Image 1 (cartoon, rainbow, N blue to C red):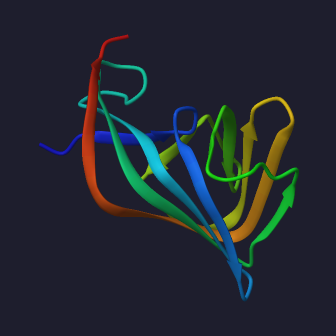
Image 2 (cartoon, rainbow, N blue to C red):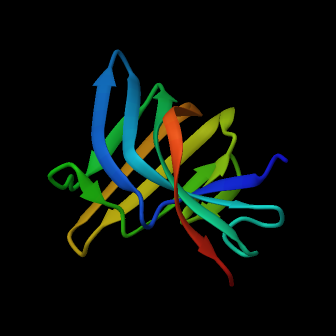
Image 3 (spheres, rainbow, N blue to C red):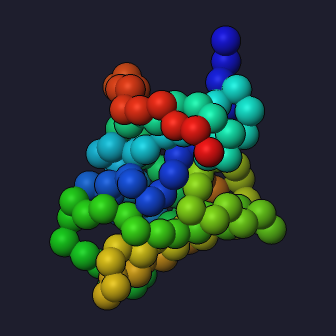
Length: 133
């Protein structure tokens, strides 16, 4: 059965942010995934971790960067006119103005903008927990 999935920014860890020729790659090592038959993050389901990366074209990164790797405390992803508070939808491959804001503790906030974004998973997911809301 195919489960509905999302990445929760809180509980994910950013390991690297690389820029090359206008492309920015942000690597989660790992990202925290919610999987559910219903609405992930809201309905009962399971928690998993999996390495993943976000790829931004025509990307610009700004802000007060923490030492990496670093745990994400909060954030939001804006794709076009859609705002995703503390989550990243799965799957994700969109050509639209994109802005990712990540908060790391009380002093570090970064913003990455781009013309498009795609999410790529690396390796296999690893089970962490069952959850009930």
